[in-house]
Length: 502
Image 1 (cartoon, one colour):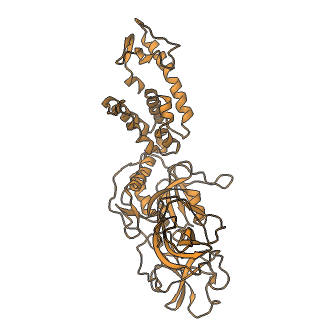
Image 2 (image 1 turned 60 degrees about the vertical axis):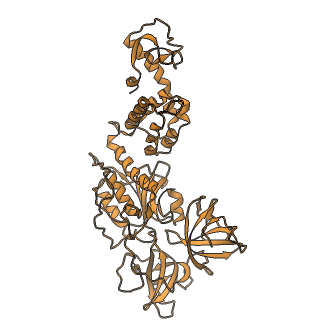
Image 3 (image 1 turned 45 degrees about the vertical axis):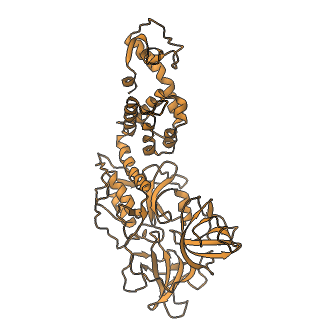
C-alpha cells in the first residue's frame, strides 16, 4: 500500500514543498536519511530505491508493534504502518485510533482513519481522504490467515449493537423486536443475524439461545486451571442454569473486548450499554454462566440488513415473554430468599390458571422482595431480569407458615440481609451528579456491590429515610433488593446528589 502512494523517482528532485527527494519519497529527514543521504543530481536503481524504502519503513513497523497491545491481523498492521508513515509516530501514539485498538474496539478504531485528511487550515484534501479510506478498508478486512476466525462477522455483530446503542434504543419486553426497543436476548439474536451467524428472522430467548448457538457453530469455552473462563471479543455469555435460565438470573450479551467488558441490552440502563462483566455478574448474585465462542468453519453470510420481521419465539419457558395481566395491588414489602422442596412454577400474575413462564426446581433459591395472599395461595414476588414482576405460589393461604412448600417465608429461613421494613412505594429514575455506591441494605458501612457513575440513570420503585440518608431502592436483575443513598436525610430535596427524587 505504501508504494502506491509514494511514487518511484530514480533521480533526485525537489517535491512540492521544495524538499530534495528520491526513490519512494525518501528525504534527508527520513529515518534512514543519514544512512542514505540525498544530493542534487543523484541517481539510483530501482533495487536501491527498494532497499532505502524498507530502511525508512522499518522504524514505523517497530513503533506499531510496540504501541499496539491488542491482537491484530496482518492487514490491520499494514494499514497502521501506512497511517503512521504518512503522519508520524507521535501522532499515532496520541491518537484515539490507537486508544480504541488497545481497548479492543476495532469498529470504533476504523472510524478514526478518515478524520486525518485535512491540511493545516482544516480543509479536506481529497487525495489524503482517498488514502485514509483505503487504509480503513484494509484495516477492516481479514487477512488470509485470520479469515477462519471470522473477524469480519464478529465486527459486524458487535457493530450492530454499537449502532443501536448510539441510536438510543430502549429496553422493552412488549416491543422486543426493534427498531427502537429490544430486550437482552432479542438484541443478541438480531446481532447474530447482522453478523451472518444465523439467518435473518430467527429469534428466541435466553433459554432457546443455548441450542441456537450450539446448532450454528458455537461451543462453550472451558474454564482454565484456576476456574476462570478466558473470554475474548465476540464471545457470547448466558447467565442462568440451562433449563431454568428464564428465572431471576437470566441474562445474555456479547463480550466487547478482551478486557471483560460486555455490550448488552439491559433493564437497569434502559437500553444497550457497555459494562464490566464481572462487576455486573457479582452485583447480580454470581449466577451460573456459560460463555460461547464461534468455532464453526466455512463462509458465513455476513449480511448487514436490519430490523426484519422476527420469527415466532418459543416463550413457554422464557423470561422474555409479553407481560400477563399482573395486578400488583396489595403487595406487601418483604425481602427474603425462598428455597422450595419441590418444583414451583413462575407466572406473571396470581391467577392459579395462568400459564407458567418458568420453573424453579427443588433446592433452587428464589430471591423475592414482596408477597401477597390471594386466590387461595401465598405468593412471593420479584422483578425478573426482564423488568417484569413475577409470582410464585409457595403454599396455601391457610394462616400457617409450616405448610409452605419449602423454607424462607415467615419461618426464619430467609437469608436476606436487607431490611425492607419502612420502604415507601415511589417509582422514578434518579440521575446522580457523582459516583454513587449500591449496597444490599441501608447500613452506610456495608460494602458496595456495584457503582453508578455520574449521569447514569437509576430506576427505582421505593425509598426509605434511615441511618442519616435518603435511600432509593430497586430490585436488581438477580432479584436482590438494592439500595443507593442519594443524599442526606435533612428534610430537603435540594440537597440530593442528583435529580429525580421528590
